[in-house]
Length: 270
Ligand code: URA
Image: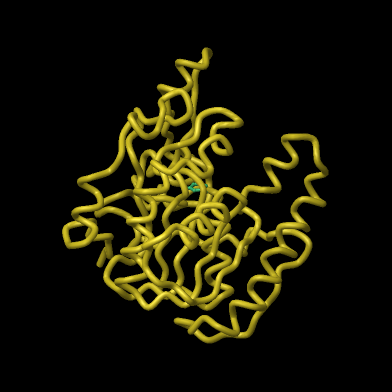
């Protein structure tokens, strides 16, 4: 048996995916609109108890058409697992399209036109599920959550809320000159604190004792993306531990237009 994500055939999601904003709302100088919108990952059948707000899709997500499936997704899947949540989650991003350029995300953090459509998803998800906790990954997702809560007329939500460091925070901190090990420890501290609080609120799918993170994420603390979260027939290596998609090009324009997909060596039949 190969479980799969049945997609967006039913209300309210059928309407949401047929009315998404395009370049009139997401300016192409700030977003890679040419790769299309990427909406969600996880349950749309009313069974989600944890709602997650990520940031924006990257190369792996552009191919699988589901959010948080690359390294950020696998790190966070491990967090969900420590929370005891194996299936009862739904994830969306702050931005439907991949952010282009260093400052574009901040520029559009409270953009009301972008927020309007995001709010329709958040409203639908809290209305059609029994959400016990919302988790925001990183500062832009935190801003998106508060923008939603303070905007008039949005759906009621009185469950728990946690803002944690984004799963790839250590990588971006190290890339801008910070000590990678210190940044990693900040991440695991942030995640341990949130897990301690959330475990008191969230009903687990599987009850198990809490093993906190150490100073760094171990390979065993990265979980595989469940097959049931992806569209039918996607090869198993698209859920594997190795990166298999990367932007490539010798000019900025070529790199923006090209994603190279390669089957990882140990996943090839010959
Ligand atoms: N991929 C996503 O879909 N969201 C993130 O926040 C990071 C990577």
